[in-house]
Amino acid sequence: MKITFENVIPNPLSEYPHASESLWGNTHVLEQGQKVLINAASGKGKTTLTHILAGLRHDYTGNISFDSTSISSFKTDEWLRSRQSSLSFVFQDLQLFPSLTSEENILLNTNLKGGVSIAQMREWAEFLGLGDKWNTKAEIMSMGQQQRLCILRALSQPFETLVLDEPFSHLDEQNTKLALQLIQERCSDLDAGFLLTTLDPTDRVSFDKEIKL
Amino acid sequence: MLKKLLFQNQDKKQVFLAAIGALLGMTFLITSTHFLYRINEFGEGNEILGSNILVVQRKVTAASTFNLSKNDFTQEEMKEIEEQPFVQRVQAVKSNNFRVWLETNSDLVPPFKTDAFIQSIDREFLDANAAEWKWDTNSRELPIIMPRDFVVMLNTFMSSMSMPQVTDELATSIPFKLRISGAKGEKWLNARIIGFTNEISALLVPMEFMNYANNKYGDEEEGKITQIIIQGKKGKFGSLEKYLDKNNLEPKKSQMIVGRLKSIISTLVMIVFIVSIVAVVSSGIVLLQYMRLLLSQNDYEVKTLLRIGYAPHFIASLFIRYFSLVFACSLFAAFGLFFVLKWWINQTLQIGGIYLNESLSLISILIIPLSFVLFITVGTISARKNVMKLFNI
Image (cartoon, rainbow over all chains, first blue to last red; front, side, top):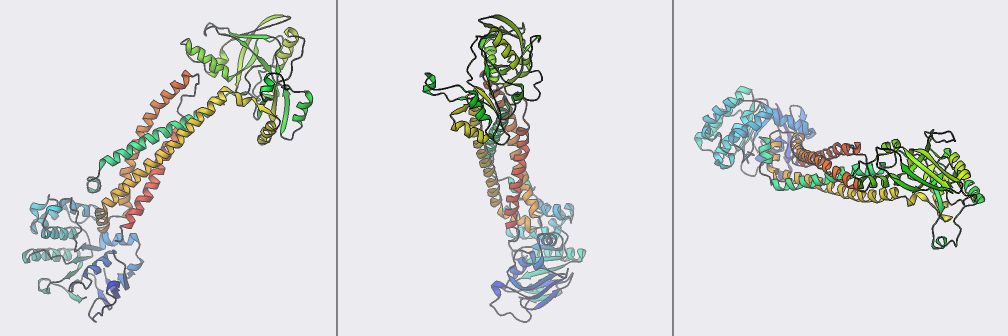
């Protein structure tokens, strides 16, 4: 899916100046399958961008299109289609179900949208060091473990673009590397791209394009 | 899994209390609706007098009790009434001037004998089906129309004798004997009930018989006309009632026991009906409010389900399905309780001689799906509205 930004400025950031290479106030096109890094300091609108793409915020000027359709014209059904098969999200605040186990959190996603088999998911959980947490409730897992579970859940469904909002903020270098490897493999399998926001230096992530905010 | 996520950590006590409220409300609603229908139906089915008919007499006052005021009607007065634009026809209700006794004449029912008072009206005032309403000296049986109060009295008597109760149908098959006795002699006649009326409190016999018996057995003196029967024109009954009131006349109907009983019981049942509606609406609101509370308690879970792509209508349907099930259980239990209450109320009324149709009324069955559909409709609208609020945040 091609995502086009045309002079988009979130209302809370409208009074601040934006550089010519910034996503805000300029035109940028994210092509289908492109791996994009959004590298920005705190308060520049990374989470706002994620929420706008998820249809959770509408307080912006300018235009965003998914393929050739402006998302400002989206009704409930279009947002549902987008959330179910076009975009998959790793939100900064994770949005897991604390009272459910790792398996149940993933099943709630795959039962709705299809995607990866539960055996494959179990394998990926082992790969990310969550094998022994498969039947553990999310609420008693550490933040790092929850973050990895959230990545697993996002990878479990079919998608065209994976949107990750600071997905490694609680992970050590080794786990970040493993998570990135899994993300790259899954995106390659689906011929999908990703849009990853981060505060960190860019040397750990392999990407096609970097955009500032 | 969704059920576990959304409904596991709720306070079940609140649902239980709301369900009990719905159960009691629905029980009383079904019961009161059923009895409102059956009580209104009571005594209506076999009314043999035509429609818009009133039997009228002068109002009873202290003066009339001591014969100080006029209580009869002259031919001129009857003519004046008949000339009113809202009156179709008027006739004197002819009474007997000889003594009458009525007694049962069958081994199948216990002996029952009573003094009686007979009156007569023309065939025109009866419903068209009263083809049996004729008599001549060769007739084997005298057709009679029985005041419904008599059936109530007969059943009270049967009840005291531990005998089964008499329905309208059964009463028409009981052979009776009528004994008339006057200055000129005495006679026994076979009699049979052909119908019932709430309008007149005397036994009704055909005019031919009354003329024959008054001539043959009665006193010489022609009796005064103290009651007249008036048939009002269709749609002008209100004007007739106003005219009667203005002229100090009163319809006999208002004095009828069955009519009064029906009126009192109907009023009581109506009060129960209104209270039931309030109870059902209140318990429905409590259930729906609890659904909204549960939705707001699960605000995070619902929001997250929507964020990962669950449709708002689907999430709303989970809530409405759960609460519909609770309401359906209340309805089912209410229907069971209604049967118990119906049986008990019918027994109680039968002790007082009132025999209502005991079969299930259609309205009491219909009220169940109607309430259910209403609950689902309101619940769905409420649930969808509340879930949609969380969709874009």
